[in-house]
Length: 411
Image (cartoon, rainbow, N blue to C red; front, side, top):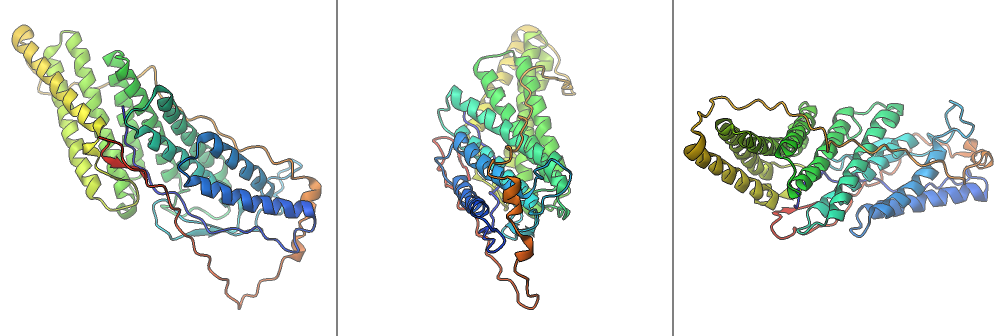
């Protein structure tokens, strides 16, 4: 089964030269600066390379992060701050707030911003793979794994590194707790979509599918509620997506719950469950239209034309008609006025983020190398002379054409 996922744009950043002329006093220190510049450039290029795979991304990210941490970590494991932490200024845009950058002279800001982009890349890789018309079992596993890895990176940044920033995160920016939490929960929900598709394909128990769909709908609802206090001009489109996915999986939950009730000879309740499924599906359909009409950052798509959407519509219709037929011939049960309460708990298939840690410090960093950076030789800034403002150009992301029947374009 193909999937459709909304994606916000990647963060963009100003170039960083790591040219510390006079400060880096030995060839070893100069080499680290050169390696930092080159590895950062290569990592940024991979974000927009459609041929990049998770192994390439991990190798490039690990190499850069292992070098960058020499500006953050103390070599003697003491609580003392590394003297190089504030030597370089970094500029990054946000996924929602256009090309207006935030700047901090702090290597931790660079670590969490680049880490954020790595996590976003994993979600985009999963999205490209999941949108294929004939996705294989191995590719579905890759999608599932990539989304769990992304969730793990976001979680690690939120819990272990963003709190170390000296400058507090501005409201509505990527590194704010609400946004990070929404990204984590969205990744979990989308990974569970893959689990549900697999369970349907293997014809698992309808009760398990209903429970997984219900848990997934609740994940999407939680992600949406987390963003509720953000400005709709930049979070509105994302929230439409989360809302429509929540309704979509509630429709799934009631549809498969109806099948479970029918199997237990509760045909009247099954009909009512399917009617509720139809109601949520109609609401999701309306939200699909609203999503397409809402301006804001993110994917260009017509989700209601997507195969995964149309399939559910047919399933609800056919299952409801079957229940009504059987009730007219066999059961003659009254259809309740109230929809059944879904108190479903999935015992299998729930997604947890893959634990993430940044790589160990590069072996190129030694006490001698750190000592070779002489901060007293930094050029003195002339307050009367304004600094040139580096332009932050948006990353040119690959334009992936939609597969047959997918009805979407993944950015």
